Image 1: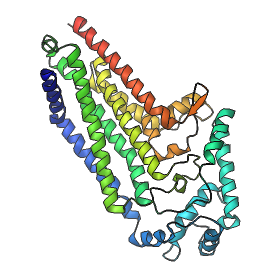
Image 2: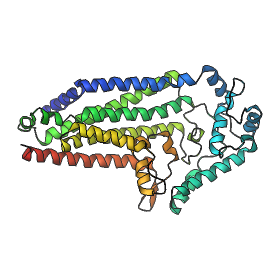
Image 3: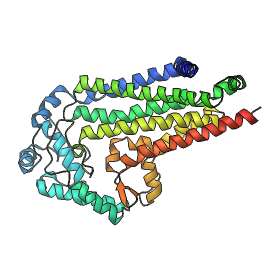
Image 4: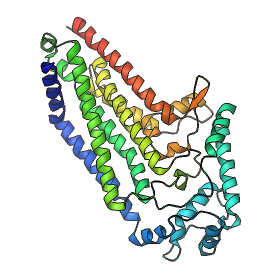
Length: 376
């Protein structure tokens, strides 16, 4: 057991001392800093002070009738005199059809229009009758009128999670795909497997070391982003409903609950990235091929190539980690049916990521064992 502990520590040090790992960690650090500071360019202290005045106000007829006379160009031009209403006007304009005059709608009409649009989108996405009934129950959990909360910090944190996940993917692709291939390239693999713990134990220790590094990077990166957002913007409004930013979502989440969900998706996705990079590098014996596959899949997931009427492939694409962690995933209402019951992608995806990780480890172990016999 002591030998395995020493081997585990050695493998972690080997990954962390790799110059590519150091560079990627530095790049991730810079990306997170940029992601945290960029909103400062667009959000002035004057805007914050004006918009926070409405914090805790119900978005009802009283607020809308107060806002309408102050709108300029149907809520597309803002000055210091009216910019406190910009989040409210954005919410309403995201619900109504393009070109509609905001002041023509009462609060009840706006909320009814929201319901109609959401269920129209669900029909376009080919949801079944069972799914529609399930969503009608969930939809009712988000009461109206919404209460406005100043949620800029929470929004910046939720949006920053997508970039953080991309950094974790790149660290996995570039730094873990060499964990096994370096021994084949340096012709030390046969020496390793001839040692006491050189077969089954070595494989699983290497896997554990790679997973530890990536999960650690995931947690540290998320903690750094959260700390920066807290210092720069605060984390007020975490109890505000996600509909303040994504009004056409039927999920009964608060912003804080969605960020917690993002963290679960990120950690399980990090496990998937790490096991894919290590297992496939052992299968192909080529780290560059694995890097190309992972980056290619990431780019593919960002492309709108699958029409929504193709239900299964469209849903699989939406469940890819880079899409599942995005705040726009709140408009993905397709469900996964299990034994007559339905769960959302936020429940199904982490489970699928973990199961795929276990499968990849098994595939990698078979490839590792077979190469020991037939490699040279």
